[in-house]
Amino acid sequence: MKTIVKKHPLAIRWFHWINFPVLAVMIWSGLLIYWANDIYRVGWGDKTVLKFFPDSFNKALNIPFRLAEGMSLHFFFMWFFAINGFLYVLYLFISGEWRLIFPNKKSLKESWQVVLHDLHIKKRMPPQKKYNAAQRIAYTGVIFMGIGSLLTGLAIYKPVQFNFLCNLLGGYEWARAEHFILTILFTLFFLVHIIQVIIAGWNNFRGIVTGFEVKPPTPPPVGEGTMEVHPLNELKK
Amino acid sequence: MTEKETIISEKQLRKKTIISFSVFIVMLVLAVVAWKWLHKQPDADGALKPLRTVLNNNERIFSNFFSNNHLAKTFPVGATVHKVRVNGSEGMSPDFDASKWKLQVIKSAGDTLFVTLDEIKALPKTEIVFDFKCIEGWSQITHWGGVKFSDFAKKYNLTSQTQMNYVGLITPDKGYYVGIDMPAILHPQTLLCYEMNGKSLPMNQGYPLRLIIPVKYGIKHLKRIGSIFFSNERPADYWYERGYDYYSGL
Image (cartoon, rainbow over all chains, first blue to last red; front, side, top):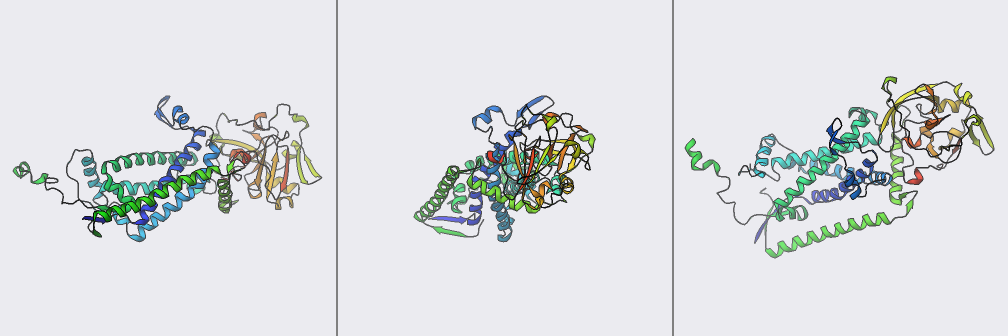
């Protein structure tokens, strides 16, 4: 017999798996658009450490000279991205799931312990509900990134009609740069997310498809998380 | 999490997992099929048909936000760039004879108005320094002078023409052509432009007369206007035919 625990509601699983390919298409079509004026780089003065994007990257992915295609895809899939994201946030509020995702007052301090734990510096994890403190910060951050992408996107899509928004974001060129930086952050989030999912293993991954997780058969061994009562620690008291 | 625990057998667990993953994989396959289907759709003026339909609907949605009170941000003359970019020479045949040029305004079939550059220059002049935006993604603060299209239309009594839905502009060699919705051409910042940086337009910027329309991407700022006509249907548009959005409004 197995004990299963409900983890992700059906709605959240759908929002998650709809967003994945839609965001991928948004980033892909964004690359096709960005190529036509690929001015961003990491560097100073004449020194360029990293060009966005290297010619070899563009060539390998067959990106050059597809601006019109990129725009038509971008302005088609933007609706799916916006509507799915909007419904997701609406659902978080209506269902109360936001309580499990938004950081609370302990999250900032705890997230550091999570990072130390994940880097194998610290053995003990702070107690958590559905998500640990680092996940709360990351998953809430990604919601704000989505909102940021929509706002910066709107500002560069219709900079005259929404000139108030465009000015608020620092003007047309800044809004474009912000839109780009957010995209880079999305891809970094994606990389870390994938690594964490692989490390977390099958039970965790199954959860975002089936909705449940299987509880470990025995309670966690006492050896874990007992550093405080280690004899040496006792001696220090 | 302690709430909503259920105890089930190994068999039930396997069954639940298989059902969920079957749905998951079916949806994944459907997504791939939809993507492939999209790319097999017929071409509609250079864009896949469903994408073209959405571009046109986006125009319908976002043109609701259009207003003559929404102005492109303007700058002091000192903010202009030193080197104005020249992008594209479609419609700019080298055999153009500027001395014979007159603007042709086709009011209706068989009723064409011919206007000289001096006559245009005699109309009230408007200058604008704004951030010129190319559809490629770059922008430049540039300085232009000319007559507002709306002033020009008033002066030449184009009242019934401006009741129509669109304006078409064509270069003298007919090599480049754009179509523009009437609200955009009548926008107070839209100019029939004959000056750049306070001097006569350079040849490669469309001498003697070009369009400056800050509520649109650069592709609509036709250089070297030969003729202007009015229509309720969309006039032919060079970049539209090559897959770009017809509206291209900012």
